Image (cartoon, rainbow, N blue to C red; front, top):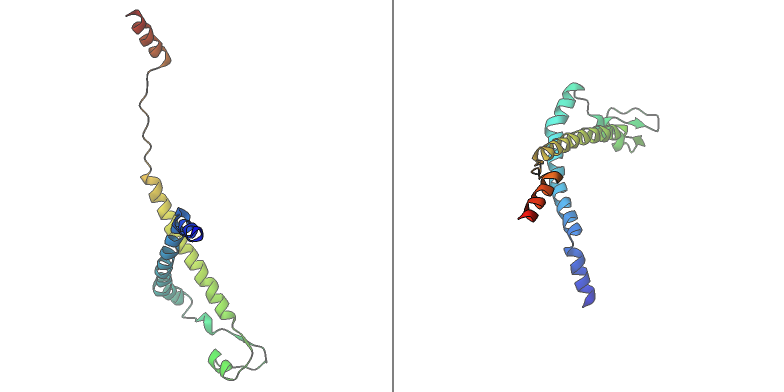
Length: 138
């Protein structure tokens, strides 16, 4: 019975519960960021780049020319789809920037919440000694 109680105690420790919470929130946050990138930012990037779909960029290794990636794959040509790498890099940079902006805003909000309350000034050493002297006189 000691094994199961140790296992349960391990699961109930704060760091495991915090990690589980972070994974769930991270998954949900990933969906939000993914939607923001796919639905908001990438259309703007597409407009800036003239509608270039980087995922369709490729190089054939057999020297033949194909009109598009689908035709090259249908012909079973050996292709390097460098466009997928370019698209992944663009997505990464955009997502990293988006997360940076959100975390920076969260840190600023967190700093604003911290209010430092000054401790009330106590009596000076001389005042304390004077009070002790007066008490001793009584």
